[in-house]
Image 1: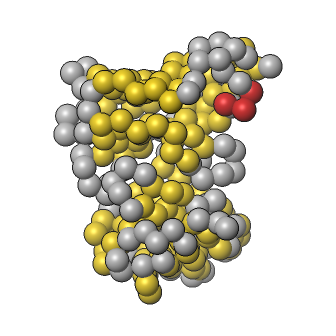
Image 2 (image 1 turned 90 degrees about the vertical axis):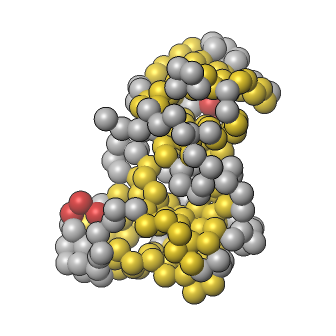
Length: 111
Length: 110
């Protein structure tokens, strides 16, 4: 059973489109995250939710909107996609401050 | 200047060698230090976790933290080709926000 899963795995889209990435965790964790990893492998936190409540909101454009319908799911909606949004987006979950479990990533390419 | 600095490599060493990976940081409030391993086209996975200064050993892996120098290290003994991956250091002040280094790409040559 996959602990943290993301869909889709790959996303190729045109500039200006709106897209969503879904994340689900079956670990029973209370906290979920979205990270962005750029082409140089730099991994930066975007958002974190604890029990459906937003607790971390880094300096991310308003075009990015996370939604947590329940504590097992955290989705990321991106409006008006730009070339610079091309990256790998990782979802993660944790129960303690120490161990974050990452999903396999969603590779987004904006053309 | 980034809060966490890490040499991106790439680093290539022969099988069986000892590998040393390092990070420096600027925020003295960091208390929890981790090393993640990321294989190509996969998500990062936690390798080692340490709290404050000191050493921690787990099999072939040893993590060291020197808070006075703001310097952390990961040593891999008897390196194997399966250790070839990108290694990311990460740290936090005791909350949910992890700050990552840029990662070091390591290749172990058989």
